[in-house]
Length: 447
Ligand SMILES: Nc1ncnc2c1ncn2[C@@H]1O[C@H](COP(=O)(O)OP(=O)(O)OP(=O)(O)O)[C@@H](O)[C@H]1O
Ligand SMILES: [Mg+2]
Figure (cartoon, rainbow, N blue to C red):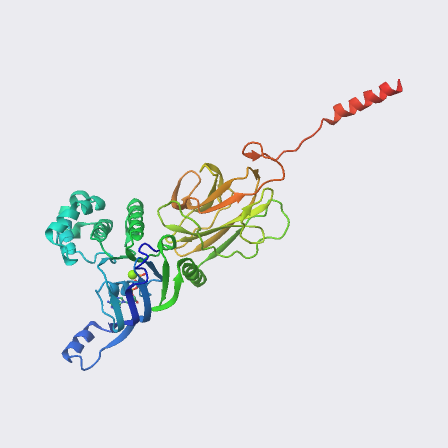
């Protein structure tokens, strides 16, 4: 991103060899003993949550961090936010930081939402008049109604996040830190927050974003860091790092299923062992209850090569990889094919094809291949929108739906297409009439 061309090379955040250890005590009394010995004897082990972390983040960059639970993401963000200090190494941060850290932090539970807004803004250097100016916007964005006057301890976790996010984005930060917090909000609030984060990104705000949603990271991240047991495992272009991370996760703990329906033409070589696809080329819109997520979609030929073009009359394979975040009792994976006008043209799913996917456990990844015979369609653009739902064909919950994830051009057929589709058709000449005619002609000639 380059919103401020002259300033983009300035690094706002710089970590040089940062490590962070937490003291681990075997017994609670060990902590007391250490105090009594005035720290002259150690009664703890060091647990290194971060080890030798060096990186720079430039102004205006959106920097994402992925990693398993406990890999050190929140610890790193807390160091950027100034809440924790590194044990060794240096961390330099310049600019006003507004942090949306893991749940609950930053608010005093005994105070009302409104008082907390004033308190938080004051900590960031806003005086009363300045907060008065932004308070209305914060209240409107949070949409928690009269709860704003109640103590924060009476809020649901979703309400805390709503208010915290509303504050974080309205205090005009130069650096915005978002730690996984959005996962708690409902889908509409989440979408609204993500739009806001996009907006701030476009305004040149530097953003540090931690999320377990590969889709969000891909949609936002200029660069991404993968933390693994407190160390940098990869750092670079978002798509590459996320793909590496997901692939490693799949290798690690996933039940993995291959669905191979016979190709419509029955013969020819089949796609070899399917690989998990982790790219989502485009996300126009996404919704669902997020109990499962689409990891990627690819449209390939029968040899597993990605197709640049749909070829009428040929077999193509639509591969969709999904991951369950929570148990999914009746998973159903499918897609919708839309035409250039955005009209739903044709679609299918595993259940519709009579293929019942086994229930998914949290963490399971399924890769499903749909083998299709492409009919002769008018040559225009077609998009694939993948989805995973839980339930039957008539009663289901949508877990994840992505609008127009892949768009491909339909290639020209050898012959013209009249209308939208050339229906597969066989022509017959009425043999009996033809034979009679020939016989009559022969008889006439003989006469
Ligand atoms: N105050 C603490 N005392 C001791 N250990 C801690 C403390 N805070 C974090 N840790 C440990 O440090 C490691 C990194 O924790 P951190 O919260 O940074 O992970 P994370 O990547 O944010 O994980 P998650 O995805 O679950 O949010 C974990 O092993 C955690 O148990
Ligand atoms: Mg965390």
